[in-house]
Length: 385
Image (tube, rainbow, N blue to C red; front, side):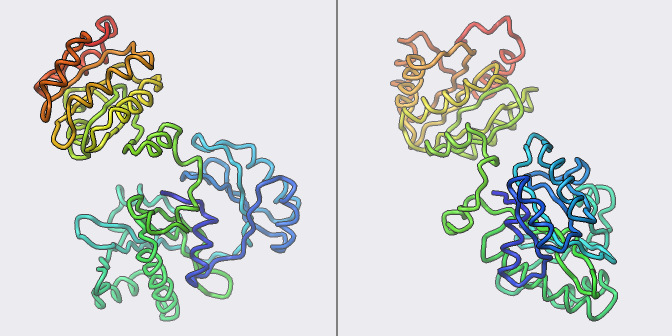
């Protein structure tokens, strides 16, 4: 789960990480008052769950209150990467003398939290990592012991030239790491971390992402969820107890088990197809889950064929078949459908499908090849194959 900059800054503030005062504005009528309270000279920033705000015109420096109002009105009219701007923050302007990058991220390879530090703050960190990886220093922090003290000290001294800045950076990073652990983050980022005004380090921007699987333990974080982050399909799937992620392809996928789902997506791509979603009905045998899954997938106009790949263990194939038949009765099913159904009660499940004129396959590769062919050959789309 991602949150807005202003929400991340509130969390930073609660952990003692220095930030500039700011005001959240949700109406044009609030711009002038916010600018006055911050002294007139401000940075006006769109709050959208997307990067690239500056390049899209969503970040502007306002020298006066009138500038802040004018820029704020302009930004409220923007849509940035599909997100209409509905919130703005005005932040007290800073005299920035130098910019750095600092961030903690979950590193599954090292099984640690990795601190990333760079003198190239303010830049797109993904591009920097790709084109100039030597510009980013990395230090692994382990949950029990923290970082290797020598590596940590060495990294700080390489990035920050003066002892006073090294001490300030260490204090900020220690607090940022504690925040990362306490809230089960997958990312905390300060970009830029800047030397400002009276020669102090300060977080000028803030970005945070959280591990969705740990949100149950943090209701205060879950309460920060922004409705624009999830599509209606994802909300409906979550309400139904389905694991669902929207993708950009044309082949709808219904699978039981996350591992099988990922393998299925890989095989579809190997066969030349593009998955439209990741949908895992889980290990239960509730026919209503299949019905809900098909309702979600069939309303996606990009989907041109559907693959159902069930390897029944706890899941009973006859219940999956019942869910399919329920779906045929309740929703319009004019997309080609390929069904692979093996495992517990497969004979019973296949018998139910055959009575309804549907066929189930054994082989996964065979099923994937067929659905990929159907997805890109509209003339063959004649229903179940």
